[in-house]
Image (cartoon, rainbow, N blue to C red; front, side, top):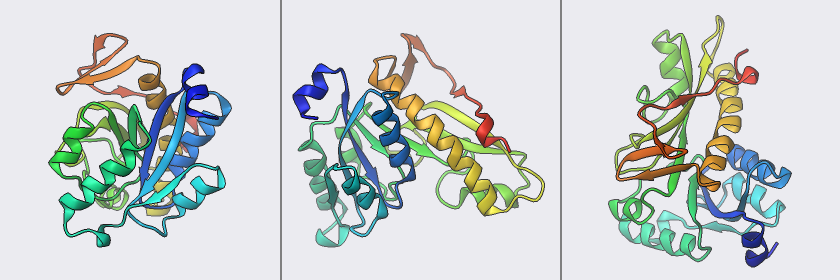
Length: 227
């Protein structure tokens, strides 16, 4: 579908950033293809040329672009190149789907209030990496995932929604991660749909849904992720 056709159909242009296998991207692309999600993924961009998520994009006929940090003098130069690669596709929303680099302040400011991230924990618990093993080590009863707008603070931007996942007896890192991933693949398209249809907005750190302030994240439970 051409850009003009997508715009006539009311589909919001987005660009997805990823570093790995791209399972969240695949869920987003499937929701868009089914008509559930009114977006057009115009490009998938990765910091890792060998990321399998780029292969997923190519298989769907979506431009797949690698912007490797090793090709640039420093983080600032890399992020400026990343901005150029993204902006060439004129997205209304940038979607982080397992993108594993920390951005410069310049990059974050450029996409303020129009960049979403999904994190595998119930933030503010377990920012950063290895969230599943840390939850298990702590004996947590609940784990899950969170969608938030991106700010300079690592995993600290305004929260939109969370999907709680119970930690079951006998869980290990793999089994817990599998259930969290199932929750991610349901939660992220839902939140993106809110943004694409104008229901969700962020301004100066304040999130609103349907025109009303969202003082705390919505909790959405998915049966497929509970056992």
